[in-house]
Picture 1: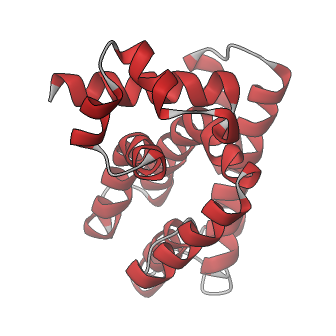
Picture 2: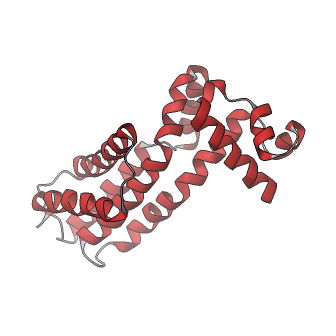
Length: 196
């Protein structure tokens, strides 16, 4: 397991430095301190390795999303959405470079999309989970009936993605306090439309 993690860390380092299209398994193995053959004992291909790196970053965000439905009627809607927004923001800040590199490999991106469709996965699923939660809170009378759940989910996650993009593009090292302030201000604004 330790070598697998070293390979994944090395892959991420090479992708972030060179981009996906210029990343080679030979370079990943060199940085991981193993043979290229050892790399293939743990991963089928460069694509498989890339997907495993992406999944590693996604785990924390998914954990928050998957418990969201169980939070219906518990705490406040704002607190529940705050947890989602922070997890989304943290994930987007880590993954934006990796995700962007997909667009440098059109054939890989096409295969990646096909895999998403087969497994009913993809970035849109996060929006569906959040909108389902908001719809459930509407039924409990905790969210305004006039609010559009999908639009609210798109606004929340879209704002987090855009914020992460700006932070990474500018090259800021954003403090935790600033991240929390962004999420607090975003939700204070959104809750004016969602409050019942």
